[in-house]
Amino acid sequence: MTSSPATARTRVAIIGAGPAGLLLAALLHRDGIDSIVIDSRSREEIERTIRAGILEQGTVETLRELGGTRVDAVGHRHDGIELRWDGVGHRIDFQALVGRAVWLYPQHEVLIDLLAKNLADGVDLRLGVTALGIDGAETEAPLVRATGADGTPLEIHADIVVGADGSRSIAREAVTGSLTGGYFREYPFAWFGILCEAPPSAPELIYSTTQRGFALISQRSPEVQRMYLQCEPTMDPAEWSDAFIWDELQARVGGGLHEGTIFQRDVLRFRSFVAHRLRTGRAFLVGDAAHTVPPTGAKGMNLAVADVLLLHRAIADFVATGSEAGLDAYEPTALQRIWKAEHFSYWMTVMLHAAPGATEFDERRRLAELELVATSAHGSAFLAEAYTGWPLRG
Ligand code: PHB
Image (cartoon, rainbow, N blue to C red; front, side, top):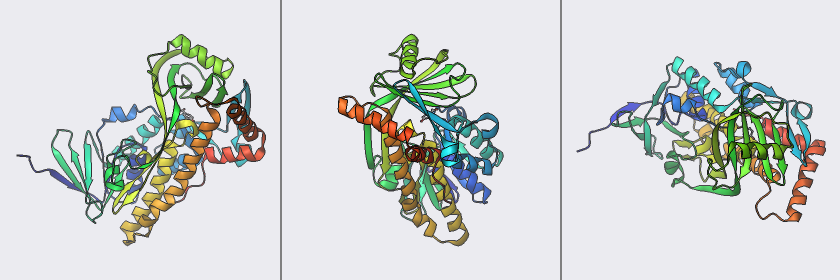
Protein backbone atom coordinates (compact mmCIF):
# COMPACT_ATOMS: atom_id res chain seq x y z
CA MET A 1 0.00 0.00 0.00
CA THR A 2 1.36 3.46 -0.84
CA SER A 3 0.77 6.23 1.68
CA SER A 4 -1.28 9.20 0.48
CA PRO A 5 0.97 12.12 -0.37
CA ALA A 6 1.48 15.19 1.77
CA THR A 7 0.04 18.21 0.00
CA ALA A 8 0.94 21.87 -0.17
CA ARG A 9 -0.79 24.75 -1.91
CA THR A 10 0.73 27.88 -3.42
CA ARG A 11 0.18 30.39 -6.22
CA VAL A 12 3.29 29.44 -8.18
CA ALA A 13 5.13 26.12 -7.93
CA ILE A 14 8.69 26.49 -9.19
CA ILE A 15 10.72 23.40 -10.07
CA GLY A 16 14.43 24.16 -9.78
CA ALA A 17 16.47 26.45 -7.52
CA GLY A 18 18.93 27.61 -10.16
CA PRO A 19 19.26 31.24 -11.20
CA ALA A 20 15.90 31.23 -13.05
CA GLY A 21 13.80 29.63 -10.30
CA LEU A 22 15.39 31.65 -7.49
CA LEU A 23 15.08 34.94 -9.36
CA LEU A 24 11.44 34.27 -10.18
CA ALA A 25 10.65 33.42 -6.54
CA ALA A 26 12.37 36.61 -5.36
CA LEU A 27 10.52 38.82 -7.87
CA LEU A 28 7.17 37.22 -6.98
CA HIS A 29 7.88 37.63 -3.27
CA ARG A 30 8.47 41.35 -3.84
CA ASP A 31 4.95 41.55 -5.30
CA GLY A 32 3.47 39.63 -2.37
CA ILE A 33 2.85 36.52 -4.52
CA ASP A 34 3.71 33.29 -2.74
CA SER A 35 5.60 30.45 -4.37
CA ILE A 36 7.17 27.15 -3.41
CA VAL A 37 10.57 26.36 -4.95
CA ILE A 38 11.77 22.76 -4.95
CA ASP A 39 15.14 21.31 -5.93
CA SER A 40 16.63 17.88 -5.43
CA ARG A 41 20.02 19.37 -4.50
CA SER A 42 21.25 20.71 -1.17
CA ARG A 43 22.19 24.35 -0.64
CA GLU A 44 25.91 23.41 -0.74
CA GLU A 45 25.48 21.57 -4.04
CA ILE A 46 23.62 24.51 -5.58
CA GLU A 47 26.24 27.00 -4.38
CA ARG A 48 29.04 24.87 -5.84
CA THR A 49 27.60 24.92 -9.40
CA ILE A 50 30.42 25.77 -11.80
CA ARG A 51 29.02 27.61 -14.77
CA ALA A 52 29.72 30.63 -16.92
CA GLY A 53 30.82 33.90 -15.48
CA ILE A 54 29.54 36.74 -17.63
CA LEU A 55 26.48 38.88 -16.83
CA GLU A 56 24.95 41.22 -19.38
CA GLN A 57 24.34 44.79 -18.32
CA GLY A 58 20.57 44.20 -18.07
CA THR A 59 21.11 41.15 -15.85
CA VAL A 60 23.25 43.25 -13.50
CA GLU A 61 20.63 46.01 -13.43
CA THR A 62 17.96 43.41 -12.61
CA LEU A 63 20.01 41.99 -9.71
CA ARG A 64 20.84 45.44 -8.35
CA GLU A 65 17.22 46.52 -8.45
CA LEU A 66 16.17 43.36 -6.61
CA GLY A 67 18.77 44.01 -3.89
CA GLY A 68 21.10 41.71 -2.01
CA THR A 69 23.62 41.24 -4.84
CA ARG A 70 27.38 41.57 -4.30
CA VAL A 71 28.00 42.11 -8.02
CA ASP A 72 29.38 45.63 -7.46
CA ALA A 73 31.56 44.56 -4.51
CA VAL A 74 32.85 41.24 -5.85
CA GLY A 75 32.22 41.37 -9.61
CA HIS A 76 34.29 43.22 -12.19
CA ARG A 77 33.01 45.38 -15.02
CA HIS A 78 34.51 44.51 -18.39
CA ASP A 79 34.27 47.14 -21.08
CA GLY A 80 35.41 44.88 -23.88
CA ILE A 81 36.85 41.54 -24.98
CA GLU A 82 39.82 40.59 -27.09
CA LEU A 83 39.52 38.48 -30.23
CA ARG A 84 42.86 36.96 -31.12
CA TRP A 85 43.98 35.04 -34.18
CA ASP A 86 47.38 34.47 -35.78
CA GLY A 87 48.69 35.55 -32.35
CA VAL A 88 47.43 39.14 -32.79
CA GLY A 89 44.74 40.63 -30.54
CA HIS A 90 41.87 42.88 -31.65
CA ARG A 91 39.92 44.55 -28.87
CA ILE A 92 36.15 44.90 -29.17
CA ASP A 93 35.47 48.05 -27.16
CA PHE A 94 31.91 47.69 -25.86
CA GLN A 95 31.78 51.14 -24.27
CA ALA A 96 32.94 52.94 -27.41
CA LEU A 97 30.73 50.85 -29.70
CA VAL A 98 27.45 50.59 -27.79
CA GLY A 99 27.98 52.40 -24.45
CA ARG A 100 27.43 49.18 -22.48
CA ALA A 101 29.46 46.65 -20.50
CA VAL A 102 29.33 43.15 -19.04
CA TRP A 103 30.28 41.96 -15.55
CA LEU A 104 32.50 39.07 -14.64
CA TYR A 105 30.48 37.60 -11.77
CA PRO A 106 30.35 33.81 -11.73
CA GLN A 107 27.04 32.00 -11.58
CA HIS A 108 27.75 30.44 -8.17
CA GLU A 109 28.03 33.95 -6.70
CA VAL A 110 24.62 34.81 -8.18
CA LEU A 111 23.24 31.62 -6.63
CA ILE A 112 24.75 32.43 -3.21
CA ASP A 113 23.11 35.89 -3.34
CA LEU A 114 19.70 34.65 -4.50
CA LEU A 115 19.55 31.79 -2.00
CA ALA A 116 20.46 34.13 0.86
CA LYS A 117 17.87 36.69 -0.25
CA ASN A 118 15.05 34.17 -0.61
CA LEU A 119 15.86 32.52 2.72
CA ALA A 120 16.04 35.90 4.50
CA ASP A 121 12.70 36.90 2.93
CA GLY A 122 11.06 33.68 4.11
CA VAL A 123 10.37 32.27 0.62
CA ASP A 124 9.25 28.62 0.84
CA LEU A 125 12.38 26.93 -0.49
CA ARG A 126 12.38 23.14 -0.23
CA LEU A 127 15.76 21.61 -0.96
CA GLY A 128 16.31 17.88 -1.23
CA VAL A 129 12.84 17.59 -2.80
CA THR A 130 12.80 15.82 -6.18
CA ALA A 131 10.16 16.67 -8.78
CA LEU A 132 8.69 13.64 -10.57
CA GLY A 133 6.27 15.31 -12.95
CA ILE A 134 3.48 17.80 -13.52
CA ASP A 135 -0.16 16.72 -13.65
CA GLY A 136 -3.06 18.73 -15.06
CA ALA A 137 -0.89 21.28 -16.84
CA GLU A 138 -3.75 22.04 -19.21
CA THR A 139 -6.24 22.59 -16.36
CA GLU A 140 -6.62 25.52 -13.97
CA ALA A 141 -5.39 23.33 -11.13
CA PRO A 142 -1.98 21.94 -12.07
CA LEU A 143 0.13 20.11 -9.52
CA VAL A 144 3.71 19.01 -9.11
CA ARG A 145 4.35 15.45 -7.96
CA ALA A 146 7.50 15.17 -5.92
CA THR A 147 9.39 13.09 -3.39
CA GLY A 148 10.22 14.85 -0.15
CA ALA A 149 13.67 14.94 1.43
CA ASP A 150 12.62 12.03 3.68
CA GLY A 151 11.42 9.95 0.72
CA THR A 152 7.71 10.58 1.28
CA PRO A 153 5.46 11.62 -1.62
CA LEU A 154 4.48 15.28 -1.90
CA GLU A 155 1.97 17.10 -4.13
CA ILE A 156 2.18 20.83 -4.66
CA HIS A 157 -1.07 22.34 -5.94
CA ALA A 158 -0.70 25.70 -7.67
CA ASP A 159 -2.30 28.13 -10.10
CA ILE A 160 0.85 28.12 -12.19
CA VAL A 161 3.75 25.70 -12.47
CA VAL A 162 7.15 26.82 -13.75
CA GLY A 163 9.83 24.40 -14.95
CA ALA A 164 13.15 26.06 -14.14
CA ASP A 165 14.87 22.72 -13.79
CA GLY A 166 17.74 22.99 -16.21
CA SER A 167 18.76 21.13 -19.33
CA ARG A 168 17.65 17.74 -17.95
CA SER A 169 14.21 19.17 -17.13
CA ILE A 170 11.46 16.81 -16.06
CA ALA A 171 8.93 19.65 -16.43
CA ARG A 172 9.55 19.61 -20.19
CA GLU A 173 7.50 16.45 -20.65
CA ALA A 174 4.25 18.06 -19.47
CA VAL A 175 4.89 21.20 -21.53
CA THR A 176 6.17 19.79 -24.82
CA GLY A 177 4.80 16.26 -24.72
CA SER A 178 8.24 14.67 -24.41
CA LEU A 179 11.39 15.01 -22.31
CA THR A 180 13.49 15.98 -25.29
CA GLY A 181 11.03 17.67 -27.64
CA GLY A 182 12.77 20.54 -29.34
CA TYR A 183 14.96 21.94 -32.10
CA PHE A 184 18.43 20.57 -31.56
CA ARG A 185 21.96 20.89 -32.84
CA GLU A 186 25.18 19.33 -31.68
CA TYR A 187 28.70 20.56 -32.50
CA PRO A 188 31.72 18.39 -33.33
CA PHE A 189 33.85 19.84 -30.51
CA ALA A 190 33.73 20.67 -26.82
CA TRP A 191 35.62 22.78 -24.27
CA PHE A 192 38.05 21.37 -21.78
CA GLY A 193 37.69 23.75 -18.81
CA ILE A 194 40.05 24.31 -15.90
CA LEU A 195 40.01 26.34 -12.72
CA CYS A 196 43.47 27.28 -11.50
CA GLU A 197 45.11 29.26 -8.74
CA ALA A 198 46.82 32.11 -10.54
CA PRO A 199 46.48 35.86 -10.97
CA PRO A 200 44.63 37.11 -14.08
CA SER A 201 46.74 37.04 -17.21
CA ALA A 202 44.92 39.93 -18.89
CA PRO A 203 42.43 42.60 -17.81
CA GLU A 204 39.70 41.26 -20.11
CA LEU A 205 38.64 37.93 -21.63
CA ILE A 206 40.68 36.62 -24.55
CA TYR A 207 38.96 34.54 -27.24
CA SER A 208 41.83 33.10 -29.28
CA THR A 209 41.65 30.87 -32.33
CA THR A 210 44.68 29.11 -33.86
CA GLN A 211 45.40 26.14 -36.09
CA ARG A 212 45.77 24.08 -32.88
CA GLY A 213 42.22 24.99 -31.90
CA PHE A 214 40.43 27.58 -29.79
CA ALA A 215 41.23 28.83 -26.26
CA LEU A 216 39.34 31.19 -23.95
CA ILE A 217 41.09 32.92 -21.07
CA SER A 218 38.46 33.92 -18.54
CA GLN A 219 38.60 34.76 -14.84
CA ARG A 220 36.87 34.02 -11.59
CA SER A 221 38.58 36.27 -9.01
CA PRO A 222 41.95 37.94 -8.43
CA GLU A 223 43.24 34.53 -7.23
CA VAL A 224 41.34 32.03 -9.42
CA GLN A 225 41.18 31.86 -13.21
CA ARG A 226 38.95 29.92 -15.60
CA MET A 227 40.37 28.79 -18.95
CA TYR A 228 39.09 26.62 -21.76
CA LEU A 229 40.62 24.65 -24.63
CA GLN A 230 38.73 23.32 -27.62
CA CYS A 231 38.77 19.49 -27.48
CA GLU A 232 36.99 16.39 -28.74
CA PRO A 233 33.46 16.00 -27.32
CA THR A 234 34.22 12.48 -26.11
CA MET A 235 37.34 13.47 -24.22
CA ASP A 236 37.94 12.23 -20.66
CA PRO A 237 38.92 15.20 -18.40
CA ALA A 238 41.67 13.07 -16.80
CA GLU A 239 43.35 12.48 -20.17
CA TRP A 240 45.58 15.58 -20.32
CA SER A 241 48.43 16.20 -17.89
CA ASP A 242 48.78 19.61 -16.25
CA ALA A 243 51.97 20.23 -18.23
CA PHE A 244 50.21 19.44 -21.50
CA ILE A 245 47.28 21.73 -20.62
CA TRP A 246 49.60 24.66 -19.89
CA ASP A 247 51.69 24.10 -23.02
CA GLU A 248 48.56 23.94 -25.11
CA LEU A 249 46.99 27.03 -23.51
CA GLN A 250 50.21 29.02 -23.97
CA ALA A 251 50.51 27.88 -27.59
CA ARG A 252 46.91 28.78 -28.35
CA VAL A 253 47.17 32.36 -27.08
CA GLY A 254 50.75 33.06 -28.12
CA GLY A 255 52.22 32.83 -24.60
CA GLY A 256 52.18 35.17 -21.61
CA LEU A 257 49.74 33.30 -19.34
CA HIS A 258 50.33 33.14 -15.59
CA GLU A 259 50.33 29.44 -14.70
CA GLY A 260 49.23 27.91 -11.41
CA THR A 261 47.81 24.84 -9.71
CA ILE A 262 44.89 23.33 -11.62
CA PHE A 263 42.24 22.23 -9.12
CA GLN A 264 39.24 21.50 -11.32
CA ARG A 265 38.81 20.07 -14.82
CA ASP A 266 35.65 19.42 -16.79
CA VAL A 267 34.45 18.93 -20.35
CA LEU A 268 31.58 21.07 -21.65
CA ARG A 269 29.56 19.64 -24.53
CA PHE A 270 28.40 22.11 -27.17
CA ARG A 271 24.68 21.96 -27.86
CA SER A 272 21.97 24.26 -29.12
CA PHE A 273 18.40 23.46 -28.15
CA VAL A 274 15.03 25.22 -28.13
CA ALA A 275 12.00 23.36 -26.79
CA HIS A 276 9.10 23.00 -29.22
CA ARG A 277 6.85 24.73 -26.72
CA LEU A 278 7.45 26.92 -23.68
CA ARG A 279 3.90 26.68 -22.37
CA THR A 280 1.03 24.28 -22.07
CA GLY A 281 -1.96 25.70 -20.21
CA ARG A 282 -0.71 26.69 -16.79
CA ALA A 283 2.76 25.14 -17.08
CA PHE A 284 5.74 27.17 -18.35
CA LEU A 285 9.42 26.57 -19.09
CA VAL A 286 12.20 29.07 -18.39
CA GLY A 287 15.99 29.03 -18.63
CA ASP A 288 17.89 25.90 -19.60
CA ALA A 289 14.71 23.82 -19.38
CA ALA A 290 13.51 25.84 -22.39
CA HIS A 291 16.77 26.26 -24.27
CA THR A 292 20.48 25.53 -24.32
CA VAL A 293 23.23 27.53 -25.99
CA PRO A 294 26.88 26.63 -26.49
CA PRO A 295 28.99 28.63 -24.01
CA THR A 296 30.90 30.77 -26.53
CA GLY A 297 28.53 33.74 -26.38
CA ALA A 298 28.16 33.60 -22.55
CA LYS A 299 24.39 33.84 -22.96
CA GLY A 300 23.04 30.93 -20.83
CA MET A 301 22.23 32.59 -17.51
CA ASN A 302 21.40 35.92 -19.15
CA LEU A 303 18.77 34.30 -21.31
CA ALA A 304 17.27 32.66 -18.23
CA VAL A 305 17.00 36.07 -16.56
CA ALA A 306 15.27 37.52 -19.63
CA ASP A 307 12.71 34.66 -19.63
CA VAL A 308 12.03 35.17 -15.95
CA LEU A 309 11.48 38.92 -16.28
CA LEU A 310 8.84 38.29 -18.94
CA LEU A 311 7.10 35.49 -17.09
CA HIS A 312 7.20 37.35 -13.77
CA ARG A 313 5.41 40.33 -15.32
CA ALA A 314 2.82 38.01 -16.89
CA ILE A 315 2.16 36.18 -13.61
CA ALA A 316 1.92 39.45 -11.65
CA ASP A 317 -0.69 40.74 -14.16
CA PHE A 318 -2.58 37.48 -13.99
CA VAL A 319 -2.69 37.49 -10.19
CA ALA A 320 -3.65 41.17 -10.03
CA THR A 321 -6.28 41.26 -12.79
CA GLY A 322 -7.06 37.69 -13.82
CA SER A 323 -5.97 38.59 -17.36
CA GLU A 324 -4.13 35.84 -19.22
CA ALA A 325 -2.90 38.22 -21.96
CA GLY A 326 0.64 38.29 -20.53
CA LEU A 327 0.69 34.52 -20.07
CA ASP A 328 -0.45 34.11 -23.69
CA ALA A 329 2.30 36.45 -24.89
CA TYR A 330 5.09 34.75 -22.92
CA GLU A 331 6.06 32.08 -25.44
CA PRO A 332 6.10 34.19 -28.63
CA THR A 333 7.82 37.12 -26.90
CA ALA A 334 10.43 35.00 -25.13
CA LEU A 335 11.19 33.10 -28.35
CA GLN A 336 12.22 36.30 -30.15
CA ARG A 337 15.13 36.81 -27.75
CA ILE A 338 15.85 33.11 -27.43
CA TRP A 339 16.34 32.65 -31.16
CA LYS A 340 18.50 35.77 -31.39
CA ALA A 341 20.68 34.40 -28.60
CA GLU A 342 20.72 30.98 -30.30
CA HIS A 343 21.95 32.63 -33.46
CA PHE A 344 24.56 34.73 -31.66
CA SER A 345 25.92 31.76 -29.70
CA TYR A 346 26.03 29.61 -32.84
CA TRP A 347 27.70 32.41 -34.80
CA MET A 348 30.41 33.09 -32.20
CA THR A 349 31.01 29.35 -31.91
CA VAL A 350 31.36 28.69 -35.62
CA MET A 351 33.48 31.80 -36.15
CA LEU A 352 35.95 30.88 -33.42
CA HIS A 353 36.32 27.10 -33.85
CA ALA A 354 37.79 25.13 -36.73
CA ALA A 355 35.46 22.18 -37.28
CA PRO A 356 37.08 18.78 -37.82
CA GLY A 357 37.38 18.24 -41.56
CA ALA A 358 37.34 21.96 -42.38
CA THR A 359 38.95 22.61 -45.74
CA GLU A 360 41.55 25.26 -46.47
CA PHE A 361 38.75 27.27 -48.07
CA ASP A 362 36.63 26.99 -44.91
CA GLU A 363 39.49 28.17 -42.72
CA ARG A 364 40.44 31.13 -44.89
CA ARG A 365 36.80 32.19 -45.02
CA ARG A 366 36.54 31.91 -41.22
CA LEU A 367 39.59 34.13 -40.66
CA ALA A 368 38.18 36.67 -43.10
CA GLU A 369 34.99 36.72 -41.07
CA LEU A 370 36.96 37.44 -37.89
CA GLU A 371 38.87 40.16 -39.72
CA LEU A 372 35.61 41.71 -40.91
CA VAL A 373 34.04 41.65 -37.47
CA ALA A 374 37.10 43.04 -35.72
CA THR A 375 38.04 45.74 -38.23
CA SER A 376 34.60 46.98 -39.27
CA ALA A 377 32.91 49.37 -36.83
CA HIS A 378 29.56 47.88 -37.87
CA GLY A 379 30.78 44.31 -37.47
CA SER A 380 32.24 45.05 -34.04
CA ALA A 381 29.11 46.91 -32.98
CA PHE A 382 26.98 43.90 -33.92
CA LEU A 383 29.09 41.71 -31.66
CA ALA A 384 29.21 44.30 -28.85
CA GLU A 385 25.44 44.83 -28.91
CA ALA A 386 24.69 41.12 -28.76
CA TYR A 387 27.37 40.29 -26.17
CA THR A 388 26.34 43.06 -23.75
CA GLY A 389 22.68 42.12 -24.28
CA TRP A 390 19.71 43.49 -26.18
CA PRO A 391 17.27 45.63 -24.16
CA LEU A 392 15.12 43.66 -21.73
CA ARG A 393 11.35 43.90 -21.71
CA GLY A 394 9.13 43.62 -18.73
C1 PHB B 1 33.40 31.70 -18.22
O1 PHB B 1 34.07 32.50 -17.56
O2 PHB B 1 33.08 30.59 -17.77
C2 PHB B 1 32.99 32.05 -19.60
C3 PHB B 1 33.19 33.35 -20.05
C4 PHB B 1 32.84 33.68 -21.34
C5 PHB B 1 32.29 32.73 -22.16
C6 PHB B 1 32.06 31.44 -21.70
C7 PHB B 1 32.43 31.10 -20.42
O3 PHB B 1 31.97 33.06 -23.43
